[in-house]
Length: 398
Image 1 (cartoon, rainbow, N blue to C red):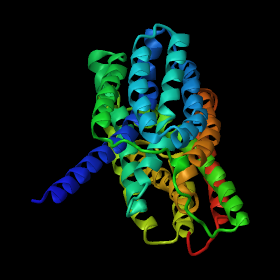
Image 2: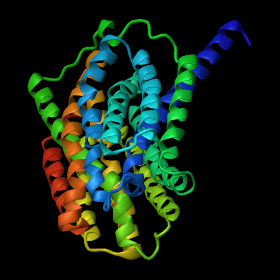
Image 3: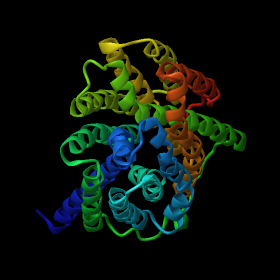
C-alpha cells in the first residue's frame, strides 16, 4: 500500500471514530437527562418525600438550562469552534453528574441537575452540525444519530433501573459520568484539529427568497416546540405511566426498566426509517403523515390498560420519535453551515425552554387529573404540530 493510500485510510478510520463518538455523545446526552425521572421514586424516599410527584419539579432547572443554554452554546460552536465545545461537553457533563451523585437534599440536587443541564445543552447545536457537515446522505445520518439518542433513553430506563435496584440511585449518576469523561479523552485523540471556526469559512449561496426563509423559521419554531413538549412529557412520564397502566406486571423496578427500554429500542427504529425516507421523498409530506398518526394513538392510549397499553405506547413513541429528525433536516436544507449552530441553538433555546414546563407540570398534572388527561392533552399538542406542518413550503427542495 502506498503512503498516500495509507494516509487516506488512516484519515477515514479517524473520521469514523469521531463520528461514532458524536453519536455516542447523543446517547449520553439523552441518557443523563432522564436518570432523575427514572429514579425519582427512590430519590424521593431517600430525601423524605411521600410522593414522587412532589420531587419532580426540582428537575425543571435542568431542562430549562438544557434549552436556554443552547443559545450561547450554538454561538460558541460557530465562533470558537465545534471541537473544543464538544470536549467541554464531555468533561463538563461528567463532572456535573458526579455533583448530582453527591447531593443530599432537594435543593442540592436541583442545583446539580441545572449544572448538568448547562453542559448537556452543548450537544444538539454543536454536535449535530459537526456530524452533518459534508455528510453524503444527511437524512440517513440524522436517522442514525436520532437512533443513538433514543438508545440513550433506553439506557436510562434499563441501566438506571438495574443500578438503582442493586447499587442505589447515586451509582446511576456515577456510571454515565465516567463514561462521558472516558469518551472525552477518546474524542480528544481521534477528532482532527478544526482549523478555523465555521464563521470564518466561505459562505454557501442560497436561492431561497427571504419570505420563504421566514416562513420556514416560523414552522420550525412551532414544530420544534410542540415536538419537544411531547418528548418531555413522554420520556419523563413513561416510567410512572407504565407502572400505573401495567401494575400487575411491573412491580419490580428492574423489570420496569427492561420493558421501558424495549419500548424505546423498538420506537427508535422509526428514526432510522424516517431518516432514510427524508433522503428520498419530500419532507413536508412525510412530516404530515407522521404527525397525523400521533393524535389517534395518544387518544387510544389515554383509555388503554395492560398489554394493550404496552402495544400503544410502542406505537405512539414510534411516531413521537419519528417526528424528531425533521427539524434538523429542514435546517440542513435551508441554513448555511457558517451559522447553522446559531440557528439550531436559537430554536433549541426557545423550544426546549418552553418544553421544560412539561417537566414542571408533569407531577402536578398527573396528581390532580391523572395520566388519561395528560395523554389527551398531548393529542391536542399533536394537532398544533399538524397545523404547523401544513404551512411548511412544498417546494422542490422540501
